[in-house]
Image (tube, rainbow, N blue to C red; front, side):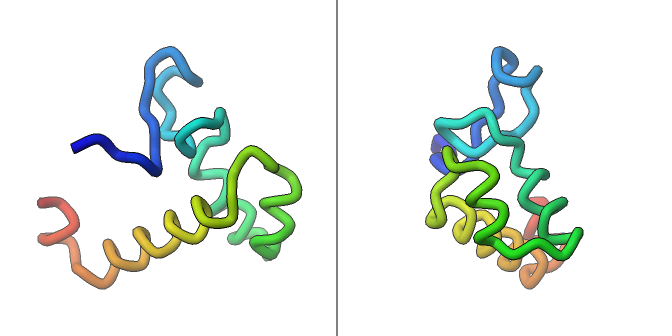
Length: 74
């Protein structure tokens, strides 16, 4: 099953995970939030990422954390 949220293509930023359809690394969203920026700030800085994409990524991260290390690795 193809991931529709994240692309990992060696031709795009050397395979760094990016939001699908963009060249924006997913880690940038987390770095913005870690720095205290609001989601709106990130979206304004990276207009090629949609709000739906950013929220879906955060929801996926929460689900992985809540599922625990054994289930997240499966």
